[in-house]
Length: 281
Image 1: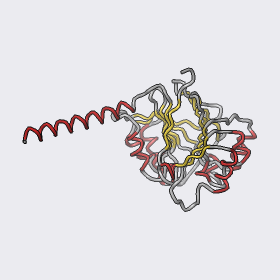
Image 2: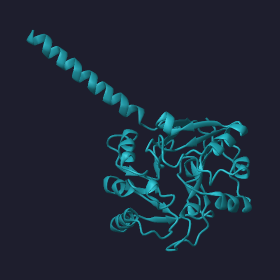
Image 3: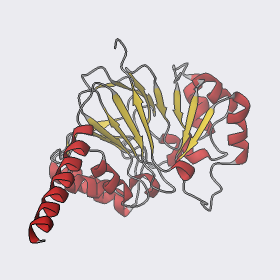
Image 4: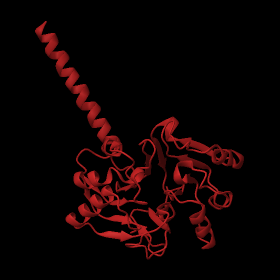
């Protein structure tokens, strides 16, 4: 009887180790672009994993949930994040980021540079200074090449925002078009109609196969003209279940439906994961 229990224990341990090894194997680079839109409730947090395994974290959600989900999608011994992007210093995009800097070796940070009195934002800036992390200021003339076929095409905001106090921080959100895969992705932060109009006036190429919907599907964003310029096949909404803002707004989802876009929402699906083949493969 004791021998049977011992054998059972060994089998259990072997199965557990095999499961762990398989899980870690799945996290290894596979030559594809992986995108994870984390389910963080009413907020935003997105992880890009490049074909060679470089990680880009865009925003940190309204709570610390992004930390757990980040750990679930990074190899166990990988404590390095190649680029951290804060689209704008509002709590629903920011909260986990100071803790991310404490737990991971962040190589670079991309921000707009706008001023904010948020305590979490000050904690983030303090951690950046203490760790002497290089800071990139968003500039549409300075894109970011990850070096393995993926380019982060910075669309917005225009330069010159460092230390500036602005009336509407949403409209200074860092907007990025992810290029290099067989599908392109436009990540829009919380920009509203004024920023959308300004981007269109710049004659910037915003076409993308997948659109991460601005401002969680608020009626202040996703104008008809902007959507037609992006012309995505699918839209992804990051919003909280039964959130008090009523996001996504029915008028916005109605616009998506009228235009024939596939609609996906973290509020109903949980985390949304995309696996994108690279061009030339």
